[in-house]
Image 1 (cartoon, rainbow, N blue to C red):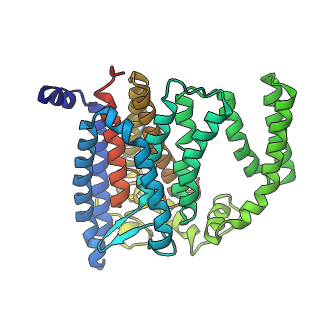
Image 2: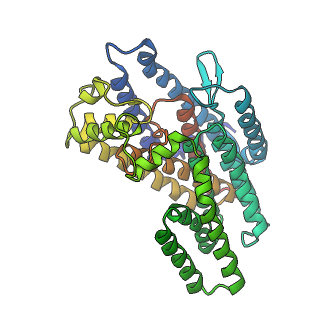
Image 3: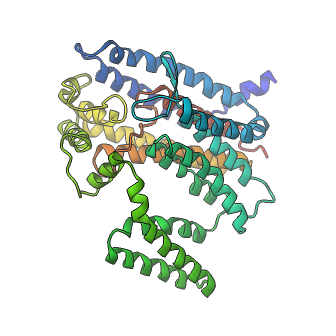
Length: 410
């Protein structure tokens, strides 16, 4: 047993470990810079030390996951998923937070159950899809897989937490594609999103429907299927305005600002504008660690959490953000490689889901800070301040590393 454990540690993927170390240390440097202001509150000053503690806890959690047998993960998947659903329901009644019910608050410790739900959903979805008898050409199996993801997403939206709901939903298609779902089915799943985006203008909606219909004809699908899909997308387009009216005011504002249809220089627009100024002012090499003026003068809101990428851009410049993005790209690329090398289907799907979740966070957060995506409050993995987020990402890395030591296990 001891020999096998030592072998497992030796087989850990070094690229993944080095990548996470670089990102975590970069995050600590940026958080220290963003919170080391003389006039800052004691709570802000403590952010750096708290993040160090959470990083150590995350390393221990990842180590425990690496040592955990695959069968244990597989057997616990549905139970963990059920527990996460119960917690998501409970937080709606007894949770706390500013303007939302997202956390269980135990003194200084804030626990966000939606972070646990992300991991639990990946495990449950992987267990369901990895069954040898699971046929993804059957509508029933696709519907069950969708429901496994949709249930926590709906509960997270109730908090409300649109950003976390989007990232959780984004797990679905990559994992199902990895499980063997037809690209045509994936197109059918994505087409309603295209309709939603285009539904506010008659001409864009018409173009979207022509595009969808053309794909259906080119793939030589039967007429009844074509009619059903066409009618379904028409209904989605008709319901979109109603769904838009159900969004909270701040959510509408963020989307409108992103689309350039509304200005908000003192609110969400201010955050994005200051973020762009910070990144742009860094030039090629940056102003130097702890020397960023936008950071030090606190022009940039949420600089140690959601907008940590802007701090790196100002202090380390284009060179620094390029290095960070290259490290993320290498980490994600290696993660998908591991998913392709693993023989155990359950582990392969867990890795695919874990890598996809990290990738979605990176894309949305970096896009948000440079103004090409709406502000959604999504942290940058391993860099942004936040215990629940860091712990979740370290567990995801633990799952990836666990699979890297069991590539030939069936």
